[in-house]
Length: 192
Image (cartoon, rainbow, N blue to C red; front, side, top):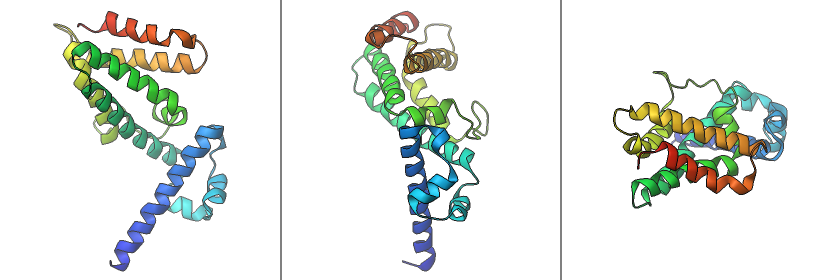
């Protein structure tokens, strides 16, 4: 291994450590607790080392959002591909999305609530964000209905899922009705 390869591997390892630590702090204490000082102390590197990887918290949030998009896309694809028919696929997609949001609240916030400096729904949207939308579209496009643009239907279904995730997490919706809400969403929006 060359010196350059070793340095690149070490740099990638430091970056991975910064992001993992930021996620841990955010999941335990919220994003307000993620500061460069706290991160530097926790990973035992100086703040200038942190800034050599990320210009600040906004870039860290953006990097976490991209990781989250990749993870969510994989979860959606795994869940929906295991289902036998369109209704089961859409139900599996909805459950996987809502489960991801519930299990990863800080990552979900980085993806959809906080400013990570990422472009959405534009030409320069990063690939992981495009792929997460594509994971939704792959499943939902087949149940959009005649004359309904699959992308537009996917946006509406996604918005409904996001609303359910956000309102449930905020304690605005009773958790005991979560499964019935998912079934209602699938039954009323998807053409099955």
